[in-house]
Length: 255
Image (cartoon, rainbow, N blue to C red; front, side, top):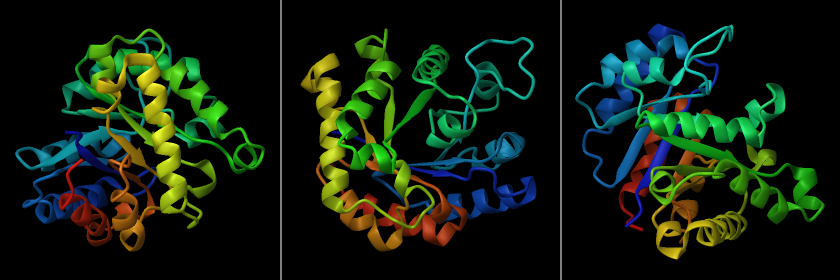
């Protein structure tokens, strides 16, 4: 049975104090959640304080990025062992904003995935096409390149510990959401790529989240789709009530 993983990506929002307050609210609201892995990803600055708040709760801690080297002259970057030490369990890797603004490539995604796995954390690997790529009929080729790049050199055991977030770039932060059917078709295709790499049994075990303006109003329809196993949530994760409005319908499902 696949896990339903719903992660709040807070991006560059919330001061440390605000992050602690939001994490406390999410942890309290998620106290009775049974079937969803609930994750929050604050800024680097807030990670340690939020880790303290989440200790002993059902909510897991994620970082928004990581560097693939252990240490060195990489100003502004954070290493995987630094994240591990403060209790991070998930790391978002390859988000479209990293790809668009900060030079992330399929090769650097692969390096980061491997590094995170060596320390026992789980990567949330982000993939997705731009509007121009979708309209140009390149959806499958883009997803194929990104999946194959991210999983290059990973063993079956390593792959089993990953999560994928399919995020159509044209739907991130725009308020425009892929229809239930569009999202399902893309997720099914991603699962077929995993099956080609590792076999169907492994492919069926990996959680594939949807990201791209998921909110309480559309969460139930998206999460009910056969191959959608949660969400990577942006704007709707910045308030505990709207975030739990996505978690709640997921908690009624089993995949």
